[in-house]
Each structure stands twice: as C-alpha cells, then as structure tokens.
Amino acid sequence: MPELAEVEFNRRQWDPGLGEKILRTSIHAEKRIFRGTDVALLEEALKGQKLLHSEARAKQMLFHFSGDLWLGVHLGMTGHLRVEPPGFTPEKHDHLALFQKRRTLLLRDSRLFGRVRVEQCRTPPEWWTSLPPAVTSPEWTQEVLSTFLQRRGKLAVKGAILVQSAFPGVGNWMADEILWRARIDPRQLSGTLTRTQLRRLWEESRYVCEIALATIAVDYSDPPADWLFHVRWSRVGRCPRDKSPLQTATVGGRTTRWCARCQKARK
DNA sequence: CGAGATGTTCGGCT
DNA sequence: AAGCCGAACATCTC
Image (tube, rainbow, N blue to C red; front, side):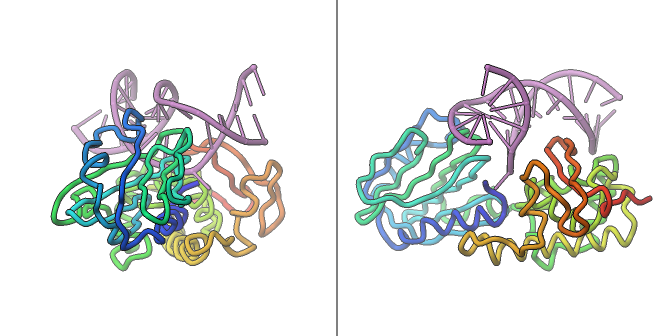
C-alpha cells in the first residue's frame, strides 16, 4: 500500500493522539521491523511522554515526543497505522501499540518489510534530516534529474525512477503512472532520453506527486478518473488514452504496465 | 496450491 | 570499481 501519498495518509491516522500522553506501550520486540532499534526506549522511555508532532517525507514518517524522543516508521510493503479504542488488545500483526487514555495507536505490518526506529536526541535524527529533496520541491530541478539519469545511463528508466535517493517517495504504481503520462517506454535506458522526454518526465513526476498528495493523502480519495492508476491492476487493463491493451513485464525488477502504442522508446 | 505483491538490502558479477 | 541484477526477507491473497 504505501508510497508517498499513502504514507502521508497513514501519518495522519495518529493525529487524534497529538498532544496526549503515552501511558504504556506494547511491542513485538523480536520482530524484524525492530532490527537495529533500541527497543528499551520504546518499552520504557516513551512512557509518560506526549506525542507532540508528526511529519512524512518520501516513504518515511517521523513522530516527535516529549523527552527528546523521535519515532521513525517505514511501512514497507504491508504496513499501516490506525487507531483503536483505549485498552485495545493488539492482534497478531500489531507489532507496535501506544496506549493513550482515550485511544490506542497501532502499527500493523504482516510482511515485516517495514522498519521502526527510536532515538533520544535534541534535534531530529540524522537519517531524517539527510533525506533528499522532495520531487515537488524547488530543489528538484530538471538539471538535477538530468545529471542523475546520465549517471545511471544503463539502467532502464523505470528502474531509475524507483531509486529513492532521486525520486523520494515514488514507488511502483507512481513510476508507471509517471511514465505513462510522459509517454516514455519504461524499458528505455536512462541515458538515452531526449531533451523533450526529460522535460516531460520532470513535469509528470511533479504532477503525479502533487495530485496524489492532494487526493490520496487527504482522505484516500481516488486520483483523477483518466489516470492509469484505475486500470493498472486489472488483468486486462486498457490504456485510458487509446484503449489498447496494456503490456505487462518485469522492468527494473518490478511488475510494470504500460501502453505499447503511446509509450514509444525514442532515440 | 503456486505465484505474486504499492519495498529495501545484500551479495555476486561485470 | 561503480553500478546492475537477482535473491532474500515473511505473510497473505487471488
């Protein structure tokens, strides 16, 4: 479920708990999502602290608590956040539970590809502050994009879009959406994009991120009806533009869907 | 019942 | 030697 906008949506699920104390926590400490994490901080230090603020960037979330505590959450492939009534008994895959007086904040992740981290420090942790500039930010220029694509010239452009240091927050469906809108064949090599293709890739990357954040992130509502999004999971999907059947193949290591008629490899 | 899934990381190979 | 590729991680669903 979680790419850029879904991550932002999940972050908001814990908003009802802002400004309120954590009375106690419950964690499945031996699970993989806590690898490399000081679970003692979660089990002890968080007690009595208030949830002050939260933020999402790329596929990461950061929750700030009093006592200089910072909780980082990555949802992996199957993670999600939700709220249940106070005293809720965590279920099999509810690996982290924060109990407040009026509700329970939960993280569920069945496949355990996600990650939880905790740190105690004055300022936000380094892994957070060193995240790359958002695709929608002014720093994400055509120039920066061009340099990156040249450096990864032998990589299929689909694979390049999945590189988080260059397209923070963009995942598999967003990559397909961007390429479909930019009319670029996902198999085309990054180093061979024409100037026009580069400009379209830049524009559509920003557009897809912006609109996803304005729809999915807010209330999980659908992006516009003409997006590939609505057909890319159907067995016999057709291109929203020309109605020709979508192609399916593994590109850049992931299942990729595109329209062979309007996404042409150019040289 | 087997294949595949909206993600990351590691190890091997070029 | 940077960088590409496939495998592994763990569980559920179609």
